Amino acid sequence: MGTLINRKFISVSLALVILNFSPTAYGGTAKPTPKPTIASTSTATSKPATKASVKPSTTASVKPSTTVTVTKKPVVKKVVTPKKKIVYKKKNVKVTPSKSPGWPPMSFEGWRSFQDVYWKTAVSQADQRGILSDARQKTFFANQMKDGTCTKLACGVIQLASTDGCKWWQIDSILSRPTSTSDQTPIALGTIRTLLSSTKAKERATVWLVSTEPLKFSDETFTKVTDIYCNHMPSTEKLNTNTYTPNATQ
Image 1: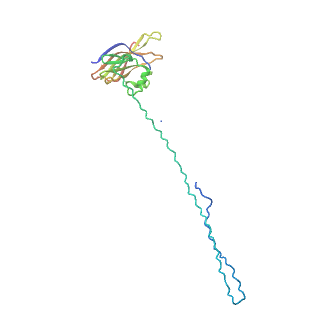
Image 2: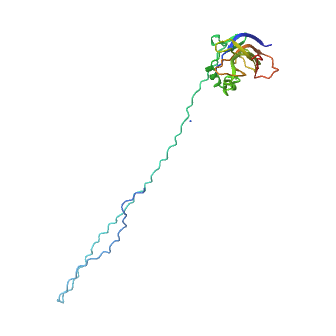
Image 3: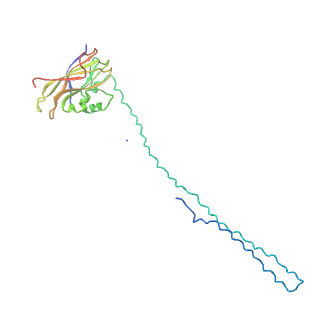
């Protein structure tokens, strides 16, 4: 058997990354053939008794020509420095996961309880956006919020948790709106029956109660949760469904 809770005043407010050379080289010059300088011989005299004396020729000394050696400067290769490839390193940002919420949920946080079942109906728009952006959060019917369904149709929201966990949940709620802008007396438009699959022990889940009731301009439609069932036996019905039944008297 499930835990049955009858609450009449649990309300859900809606909000919707160059080569260098020296001057021209000169080749070696040819050595000139030395011309020997020969001294003139002495003229023989008419005196017969005298032998002509010949002075030895004087060998001219020839200075060797100077060879000009041109040494070429070594070819200096222009070194091309390749551009360094800039590698942008990704900064490793350490993400600190949020701490798990304490247990049990506290009343000052807006939670109510009965035995081992906890629920919260006052969930702000800021809280809902935070829940939708956090993949670690347990949610039901979050797509209807993400795709804009709940900006066209009336939806409520509730958070649930159980000390021992539940095999499946049932939530019954009434959809209402004020009689008029001047008369805030609620008129019941219909009922929403929400069936959910299991949650673990102490696991918090956020559930959107989705109807097929169209929203009107400046609509103040709201839901009131009447019953919550935490079931520990297997379900015989299709789970994760919202069934809206409008009142015939609308």
